[in-house]
Image (cartoon, rainbow, N blue to C red):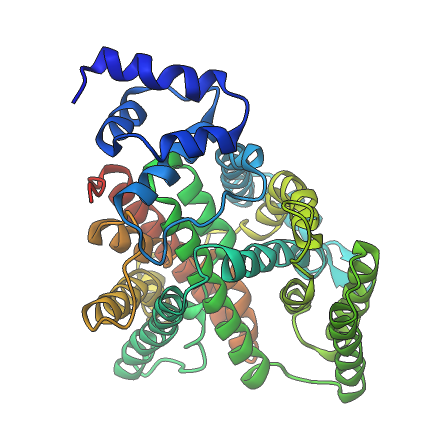
Length: 450
């Protein structure tokens, strides 16, 4: 192998002087992976984080040509460089909300987020409205990966589905076990099964290129499937009143969206207009309207010129708006939980313990065990460039329930409002512990050299 100075001279020009990403990618694929990895580990990419991401993706392709290896470059690489800053904005908003909720200004904070607007509280409108665009963006990314990216193979899809099932079932079983032993309420079992997609991806984004790109896709897929499962459970068993007429309207809007796709319609206006109609009907039907974002994403067409498909254009337009406006506002209105009445006795309540343990231990055990089982039985391949320790760190991050667990608790425990606060405490405890453990593991875990 060449010396460090020789490697630096060899790679510096192409990484920092070449303007064409495709040219750089093609050139890197012809280089020695050990030399490329040494350059990536020693070079400062503060002003070109997009090139660091590109280099890591190519390195994974060189190390292992598995099902999870990147097939095409991301839709807009320049925007990926902003993920860490967007994550900091999200986490800062959540921290500010927690501080205000537990300060002398708590009265003003709660008056603001609970201010009635058209018959609903402000924070409810933000959850029901703008957050639907977040789920639309996540759904678009998932569809892109399913068709032309790292989830295009049956093996990769099987791994994500098995992991999501483990993340749904095991946390619920832990909650039930704790509350059965302590004669606690069993209605809250869906609370620890819900993963907060936004916060989990935000923590992962803070780690930059230390995390293989395949693990990012894996986390997004697992958390989204987990959300779909939790949303289905809540809609079937805990939605108090479903309105058939509104459901029929939602189905008709969905049929029109499908017809637009089949007829080759490529106008964003058509899909956004019909998506808004679908959102409105779901809201009236009593189903959380964020589901509309996911349904629209699955029907937005992906065919077209490279980078110019309808899905690509919509994804590029939504990403900065969601990252720097919608998610921080959502976190500020949802994360403000008061701990003024918390004492030792309340922390030992079975709802608190079951929720916290379900999130923290249940996701680690359920997701990691499912992944290990799938890989060891050859039912699926391990994500390219990922070690078992890194996979365990991602499993820990899936225990960040936070706002999704808070939402699930408000529905599942609605007949017992005195227990909603206890579920919130457990959700915060389990989420913080999961975030700290997952970040620590992924920050210090050795990288794969395969």
